[in-house]
Length: 338
Image (cartoon, rainbow, N blue to C red):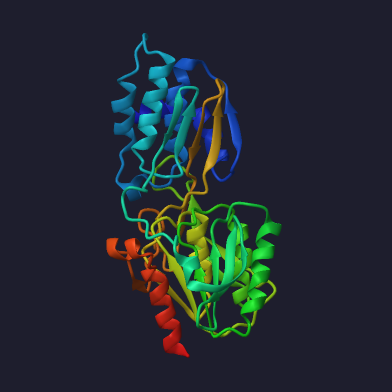
């Protein structure tokens, strides 16, 4: 089956490959009968995690294409394509048509351990908005910065990064990114770059560069640029949970460049993709993951995540009592370093 489709769609596959590394909005113009094969072939040429996830995309083709017949309605075709993409169990892969959206979620796989009660531990709050919150922990000289998202304009995060000017006289810092679903990697750089005095590598990435699922470019190193160096030498505790995804996970790798970092909480959400947006000629859209991202130890983020130095999870009792056990552990660790 695979040989046949790669011959039939060789030209299409070549066009898709040329777009593999771009976050674009490519539009494909074909008859409705071809929509399934356009999507399947696009993933076949670009998707980077088939071997990692143990998925035989040829078998997926056989299973789902067998459901397509001359009488298949567009609604049924939409469901077939959507269900096919969900086989990948990739939160960055989704398919949207006029009949609805298919989007994989990991949210029910693990408890969230959210930062819902964190503000109750602060006695001074200088700022609290949709991007983040900054203050000082009660009865301590420990600063607290929560980064809620990396979605937004660079200037929004420049203002958040400027809040770090207030930590210079603190005895330690809690940096809380729990339930941060990601956004723009550059926004994370704006903040993490303040903690290093020289440019430092933090990530390896690569993309497909051939028809085989094992064909990849060489690993490319990403560099964190030192920006407006904070010159801070106290302990920083980074709080994470299973809802830390994508560019927020890259932020964890960036912060690992800071020597005085300790990560507390749960493993991150395990999803990195650099997705590309596609548009079919009938308006249906989908996203396909384009890269593999790995730590400096070449450990893939996808399906693995980044483990904390100290595993701390909420309990039903602590949640009922309004306690934040992860933040409490951070306070204990900072207190021990004074």
